[in-house]
Image (cartoon, rainbow, N blue to C red; front, top):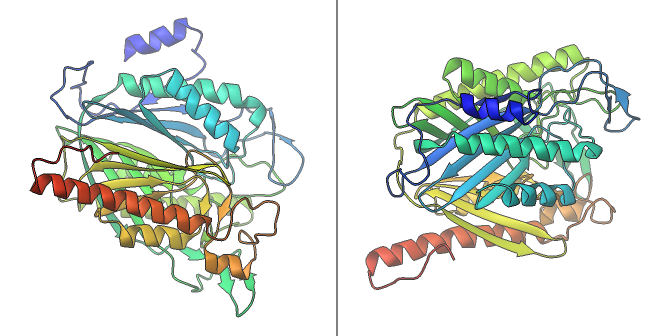
Length: 427
């Protein structure tokens, strides 16, 4: 690791500090690991704008940045088996354009040994990004990816989930219209949402915590300010800190189906109180995640990944499903899908721990359910030029992913029961 940092310094990268997850010291070099041994490596790099720079706001003119509430990171987890290397890249940003998603993803594939990469944004509304700095973002994301790959070590993987009620549906469905429920500090009830916090925990073979993937469905909007510059990763920042302090290891936060779901303290004012509230929520979710990790009853150290994908047009979108172990899968979707889709995926997938990852590998905007689209309102008005989808788009996407996952499971069962079947279940 020290030699890597020296090399980066000599290449002129001394101004950027890469943080890696140390884990155990039993790193895997090239192909010297056991066949089908799971591998993982992690790194993160600060991508915050600099103090004094002109930074975009959500709805006002750009402003000079005077303070960073907490850093924005590019976090990279590389996982592998004996055949594949797959990268998860989570950026503490509000959004990337669809073109930027594709360009960054291709840049990482072209300049690394990754076989596939899943690029996501955490969607922090205090992570507004200046797209004129995109080349710098590509450089930093690649550096973090290369650092993560240099840290690959044998690991074992387990998953669990826990219910925690810290979010609500922000759309009140009336008989023929919708009322938006933007703030809810009184924690009033509305239609049910998915309150499951899911965790995929990756640890060294000696049990040392390496990385926890945490999946929750609630807009990171507590520190949001439409008119002023705020730089913060919102509650995922405090969530990561809580897990690190109370259990150990790094954290990769992946937002779920949060298109119509807010945290109860969304859009808190003034900013000082918002920062406090985001830390409180992050701490609660972090504690819940630690409880979930401690409840994991099985870890897998060997196996083969399956990466399934399907492309769509009108709008152009790529949906994927990554099966990590026989009981763990993640499905990725390129937009702000309404919460019902996440609930459908978990209920209908034949894989015990299935995670819905939104805001991944593309940006097609809001994706409402058919019921929501019929009522209209924010995020579901199909006549709005901001919406790129049809009424049935989301259901088509979710049906395809459920079918891919279940077909894969059926194929595995058929092969197990009939040894003469040779077809590859990953296709």
